[in-house]
Length: 544
Ligand SMILES: *[C@@H]1O[C@H](CO)[C@@H](O)[C@H](O)[C@H]1NC(C)=O
Ligand SMILES: *[C@@H]1O[C@H](CO)[C@@H](O)[C@H](O)[C@H]1NC(C)=O
Ligand SMILES: *[C@@H]1O[C@H](CO)[C@@H](O)[C@H](O)[C@H]1NC(C)=O
Ligand SMILES: *[C@@H]1O[C@H](CO)[C@@H](O)[C@H](O)[C@H]1NC(C)=O
Ligand SMILES: *[C@@H]1O[C@H](CO)[C@@H](O)[C@H](O)[C@H]1NC(C)=O
Ligand SMILES: *[C@@H]1O[C@H](CO)[C@@H](O)[C@H](O)[C@H]1NC(C)=O
Ligand SMILES: *[C@@H]1O[C@H](CO)[C@@H](O)[C@H](O)[C@H]1NC(C)=O
Ligand SMILES: *[C@@H]1O[C@H](CO)[C@@H](O)[C@H](O)[C@H]1NC(C)=O
Ligand SMILES: *[C@@H]1O[C@H](CO)[C@@H](O)[C@H](O)[C@H]1NC(C)=O
Image 1 (cartoon, helix red, strand yellow):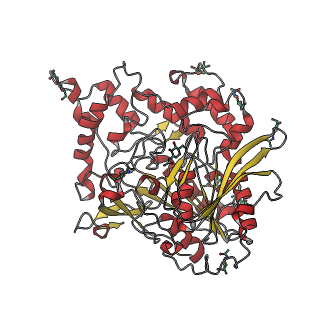
Image 2 (cartoon, helix red, strand yellow):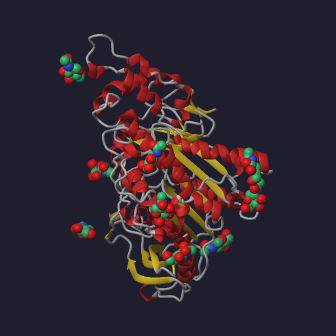
Image 3 (tube, helix red, strand yellow):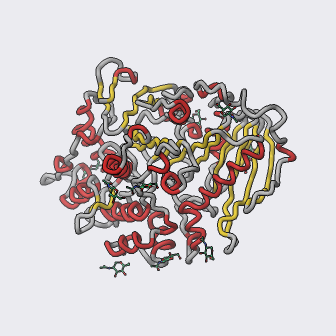
């Protein structure tokens, strides 16, 4: 796969970037850079990589091995997060020789544990950004929670928000020292873990934030993940549904009931809100082969799986699954495997009890979790005035796949709705001027396969977000219509807000197989409709 090597590929009117940025001579030499006297920040490595040399860097969470990156200076840092306790986080700042005057922080996923070097290398520096990333304060896999216990409070807070915030502050100072001038604008691109906390509590960290399927309501998300597990587990119970039934029975029936409702039978449910899937049609009749139909227990489980999750007193806890991701749901939360992120969260951050099993989860546990809010990682404040108001003018773009199997897309819609209601009731602002949410038909969680989950989904799922270019799923072009990062830059710097985006599907989710089709991504609450014409072309669809 060829990576862009020039910031010109950003396709924006950004002549103010590298060309007229730092004047020649003011940029420090990488080999003699650091350590600079920054309180609480220690240098542990400074390495210059010439253009097109091998960059082969890995940690427990993230790795990159490419020979086609532009020239850059890699700075490795240790950032003190609590001087009293002596706790630290690792951070890296990647400084391209050909800088566009901006910084881009890339996020993390799950409970991980590692600087996201793959996105620094595949997104930030090829597009001219100075890149920042943190390990969130510990090293570990996406689903490993052991580092948090017993009572490792500082590490939990670092994971919850502190490592990211302090790494951004340190990274911006490094950028200023290195180039001899501060960055003009600060951006964020991530999926899953992190950042809405920054938007709410540290509004000056970023000017533009692109966040995919955020885990911004951890106290409810983790309970929901266990609730979903329990809908089908254990595999010996009558409500268990086998992977074959998910793939061979449920998936085709969902398509039969829902696919054509958007005007096109193509294996993608463009907007599951317009289909109320009825699993009852699959009820076993006398003598029917049990692996081709559903029992009453299984239908009960499916009703819970496709529904929002409420407490006994009808308090909303979290969204549910939507029809359209059946071939991935077994591998998500409703298969045989227990969801280790949720289990680790309750064992090591909430109850401090390694004997806790998913079957011990109950309403009391949810209440305890809300009271503790480990690491204060919940980011559900609907008041974004400090970030988005006239004094800062920050912009927020959010995306989520309708077939997300790890965080219900209902969570993104729920947060957007609370911000919308707050904005209408309490401000003179219009949410459309600062916060836009895009739902991606058929896409799974973050498109990630850099961790234990191999995903993709049958979808137009390439639009410049994290974990896409690095998985041979790059945007079709680097202009703002096809590249969500460029769309954000254009919104922040030129005031042109993205109306729709155009996403690409590559055959088999791999650019080397060629383009399958293109589709618009519609801004919530509008929905995508087939107008007629070539179904492989985004032009044949509209958002209405
Ligand atoms: C890249 O680094 C890994 C270890 O970090 C090593 O196993 C591998 O051989 C390296 N690849 C190349 C092509 O040097
Ligand atoms: C820093 O760590 C110390 C010792 O664990 C703790 O008492 C203190 O509350 C921590 N401070 C913050 C701001 O987290
Ligand atoms: C920041 O933006 C200004 C105005 O567009 C421009 O003159 C300057 O060169 C930019 N700075 C950098 C570091 O790119
Ligand atoms: C478990 O430990 C964490 C971290 O010290 C703490 O915040 C939490 O309150 C503890 N949980 C209980 C139920 O005591
Ligand atoms: C039931 O259906 C499954 C899947 O189609 C098939 O493999 C199996 O042989 C069938 N069993 C019987 C008893 O017909
Ligand atoms: C809920 O679960 C907790 C932790 O496993 C347990 O201590 C408590 O007894 C349970 N409460 C109820 C009402 O079942
Ligand atoms: C929203 O937040 C802003 C800035 O933090 C604050 O000044 C304002 O009072 C808040 N608005 C409401 C209605 O709480
Ligand atoms: C308006 O702001 C008040 C004070 O912060 C808050 O209690 C209320 O819930 C907000 N209204 C909405 C609809 O969010
Ligand atoms: C994409 O296809 C190429 C060529 O077959 C292959 O080398 C590469 O590993 C594939 N990428 C992914 C992420 O599977």
